[in-house]
Every structure is written in structure tokens, then in C-alpha cells.
Image (tube, rainbow, N blue to C red; front, side, top):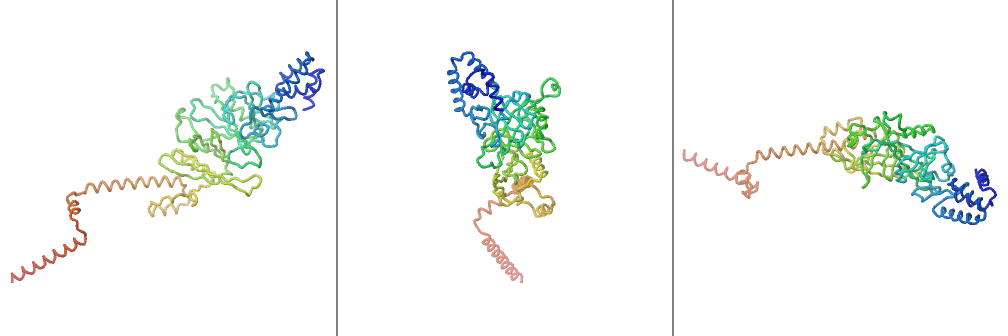
Length: 449
């Protein structure tokens, strides 16, 4: 590749000195059109060759100061390093070269797409069907590569319907290797951020007139043996009706992580938290347990505990807890069924994670029935039953209080409270009265005789 590039530069530069052509080639490596014009100007005005050399050096130095990396074919321009990028500015594994991602993909169409991660801006999206290439975003004006990832470095690729939108749209989320937000990174490895971009839904009546970008990405991924994971009703379907598109199925659960709101998606390979930074993909192998806390009448909290190991030392494991709050109670049945279907551990019976013993107010018969049940209840089901039991007990207490109010005799209670005597005094007084009556009775008998 380098030999071919040097030959083309010589051909363009004509009889220019090799040092001049080298400086021009390095300075304008990513702008072939501008490089050609500079070559032609240098050939036309050979007396200005030193000026073109100085300009080329200056442009090259500016690009290096801006964070450019130099590869075998010349400098690679990057405006700034994003948090978590590798040395070449791409979302690739450490140690991989960037020539493939930086090279021209003439057969791959570039479409305009709205990105939200790692940058929030409109860029040109290219999705290659070549297994040695991948997905990348280009600057619309300069067509320089802003960021990208190779197919072989993609760990998860999902397509999710965007909630709370008047028009149906989809977000593609690319999670590169070690970029799920949970897994431990190899030593001296930068953080790899996911990629998220939005595509509109194409209705059936417009299918022949408008390009289906969603379908194009799915087919391109399928051509390189990568499956795009999408939500479906068999895995999970929310019971909360959408506010803007009523009647449509929804597959998301709204929740909060700290002060940030977001959405949980329960997929066939794991659970996704999107679409604000940081994104998480909880794949089944790294989920240690799932439990519920703060169970109220309308909401509850979902806690996911992960267990990951270090790539350099598999025996060194780490556990992390992720709490998602304010989950609607209407979806607890579907979530619990999802957990049981995939044999994810329910930590409700673990003593270390249980704040209190559930069903402590239940009757003995209820406890025996639960213990004898072959299928163990989940924590959420127990908590819901406990709440119902407390509500029923509260209603019975209210009825008892009402009955007491109806039978209340203010006169008798007032006399009792005003007497100021104890029960023992009352008993002594009662015994004295009985003795007095017996003595009077005896006197009456003597008089009769």
C-alpha cells in the first residue's frame, strides 16, 4: 500500500523533489483532492517550492497537535479523543491497526444518521458487508472517520424501539468487546464506548418509495454472521400503555438509575439499560442474581448483581450491584416470568440480601401451604401478598373499631373512670356487701323465730 501511494504521489508531483512530495503527501493524506491541487500548483510554480514545503510542514504540525496518529500511509486526523477511545480514535480492540477503518469503502453507501453515543450529532453512517470491515461514522463535510468498530470486535448488536416518540423510530446499539459497561477491561486497556444511532421506521405503504435503513443494517450484519437482537413479546411485553402511540405493543420498562431516567429492555440474550450514558448490557453469564426491594403498591426497585472476572486472572472475580428504581408494578409479573424462564437466580431467599423475613404476619396455615408448595415464590410475589395481607388486616381493624364505637356506653365508662378505685378494691367492697347481706339475713331469721 505504501509503495502504491508513493508511486501515485510521484506521478502527481511530476519532477518535484522527493522531499517536497513527502511533505505534501503527509500534510494532505486524507484530502486527495486538495493534495492533487497542491501538486499541480507546485509543478506550475517551481520557484515557490520552498513555500509549499513550509505550508505542508505547518499543516502537518497542526494535525499532530490536534491529536493525529501516524500510520504507515500517513497521518490519521482526529479532532479530539473521546473518553474511552483507543490510540487511533476508533472503538477497536487495543493493538489492532486502523488502516481498514480509515481506508476508502467505495462500495458502501453512506447515509445520514443521528448519533447520540459517543457523540450527539448528525454523521454519515457506513455499514459494510465485508467481514474485515465494520461500522463507522464519517464527518459529512470532510468525510473523515469520526469513530467506528470492526465486525469482529462487536460483542452485542441490538435494535430497540424508541419509547415516548410520536413517530416510530429505532435505536441501534453497538456494544464492542469489553464495552458493555460491566465487564472488566484488560490491563492498560482504554474504555470502549458503545455506539447508538437512530433510524426511522418505514411503513408498509412507503416500503417501495423510502429506503429501509433498519432492514439494511440487519441484513448487513447477517451477511457477516452477526445477529441483531430485537425485543419480542415472547420474552417480555410491557403492560403499561404508551402515552403517544396507544394500542402499540411496548417492550420497555421505564426506570431510574440514581437521578437519570432510562429504559430497561429484556431480550433473549440479556438485559439492556439505555439510552443515556452510561449504557449497560447485562448478558446472562455475568448476572449473579436479581432481587426486588422497596416494594410498594405502585412501584418497586429492581436490583441486578453481576459477577465478572479479570481477563488476566479468571479466578479474580468482582461483584457489582446495579439498582433501578421506580419500576411500575404493572410489569412485575412479566419481569418475574422472564427471570424464571431464563433460570436467573432470584436472590429473595438469600439471607445476606434479605432485609426482612417476608410473610411474618401470615397465619400458620398460609405458611404451611407456602412451604409445601413445590415451586418457590419469588420475592416480589411474596411482597405483594404481604402488602395485600396488611391491607386486609387494616380493614379488619377498622371494622373492629367501628363495632366498638357502636357499643360504646359513655355513662358506664365515665363511672368506671371516675371511681378512682382499683379492681382489688372493687373485690373487697363486693365481699363486704355480701357479708353485710348475710348478717342481715341471719337477724331476720332470729326475729321470725
